[in-house]
Image (cartoon, rainbow, N blue to C red; front, side):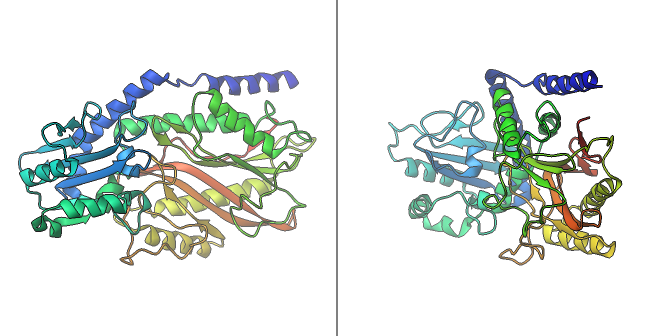
Length: 441
């Protein structure tokens, strides 16, 4: 039996190592190909939907607008000096201008439109480009509700408005809906890559929750966290947050809130009978994952998890189903949240939902379906909220509290999986956990 377990653990390790992770030069090629596709095919659609025919993004080096940062080619790690991008959409002609008020092209897609020798003033050149096109609406990245869409700093805003001819000032609007849709919308090719990312994430968790990493009675939660972090580094990838691993057991008291990085016990020794939980995500090809899964450490003589823990996981899966079943295009996150929570409570569950957009950023832009400390919904300036749109990805993040008489306490079944909302409705990007990991297995 021991030999079989060793083979299984080695196989799991091999699966993670053997992922087809690209070298840097090929990653750059893929990133730039994705950008070109997004600029040429996606951006015109998004500008038409937002009703903005000109979008101006302004950043200075090391103080990048979060949206502009996603538009830089793979060989640009930061903006340079003051970088100004101008996109102009002429729907009647079916064209889109992609210009940089900079001294050089920004990758292959965005062409330089400024010769400093002919016009020394960068702002004056921007105004010339605006006047030549005479837009109906000029979108700038300022937003009260969406931090990712609020990347224009005050200095650049003030300078822009100072230079802008007075007849155009009434045409300046917030580009928040356009900015959010650019960040949230995934192309078909990006979704193929997202599936690959989630597979890598699941495989690393599977290896972490095995005897190749954990020796019950010896290994600590902190050691597993750092193993996961090191594994990502060894694969040539990045994490966008430090992994966490925690334990629920009969002798422990349930924490008073969901996430407390300062209070969460560190260095707890993992022992038989423990219910382990991890929170883990990676970054690759400018996309991100975010995943929470559970494992049970078998006691001597056990070959499977206790039935009450299996049932608890099924309760968690049921809350997932209620949430994803209410994901309908046009509904706001607050509406989805309220309906799913009410349905769960009607079924006798004790759910908490805090699902967030996922993709270009880990905690990305889009509709927010609850926060752990805002179960009555997220306040917005218009009192309505941002709607659910197709071709978007979410971290289906939630928990349900389950009373375990066998443990004489409550536990929280905390789950998180990447889910895609597309033209045909919801699906998980690469499956979800429906069975506990077993250690050993």
